[in-house]
Length: 287
Image 1 (cartoon, rainbow, N blue to C red):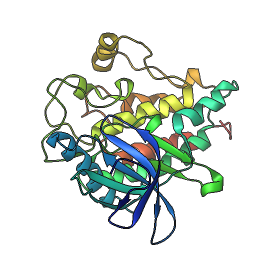
Image 2: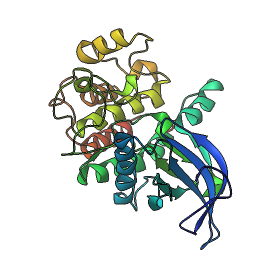
Image 3: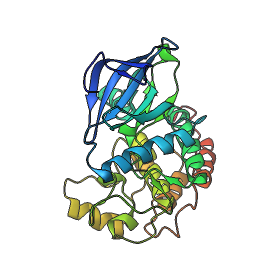
Image 4: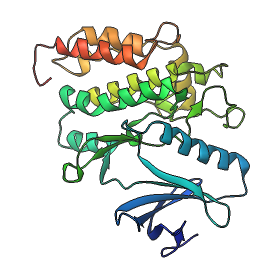
């Protein structure tokens, strides 16, 4: 299966290639049973057992999160050649990076109320994932997809390809840090053992900071400097970067981005509840 026109399991017809990544090709397809359009991700390198395991891990993680804002999975299986595939909902819209960037390109900022609306389902999905023993590990704006209002609206949390099912061995190469640099938790930079759901708590803190301030907490192109800041640096205040936000938001940032995971919010649920409470205290209603 490597071209438009092919069918999987006699049900999903591949229409056109719409993207590719490090280990998969994504096609726009049609479900011949429902006539609806779908996205079909097909494994590129069927010979690599580690990549196959990572790909199948994504399918299992997404299937366990049905009913949340995680990308909906219709089916997964193997092609006649043995390559794994996942059939998912086809999304129409843009990722959060572009969504926020549009507001910033006009000299504005994403309103806090809108940020809460967009990220609340993400927080709820991460909470459900953690209850299933799944850590996302790659939370960032480009993995949050904002669906066009004409297509139903809402958001989806993407890319569980780095998701770690707790208790299963890591698939990342020795010495490789999983995730996107600015969103990586200090314990991952340090190479600590037993990485857990508090990595996602940290990443969500960075994501909130990015949405409200227009920048990441520590902007640099140097991985060495970023690693040093993540593991030892002083956390910035958010309120001076966003007039109208209450000073209490700075306390939230310090706890969400705490270097020691024991000092951090211990769950997405507690972190999000605290954020909602803090922003409700703002004197400026649209903040």
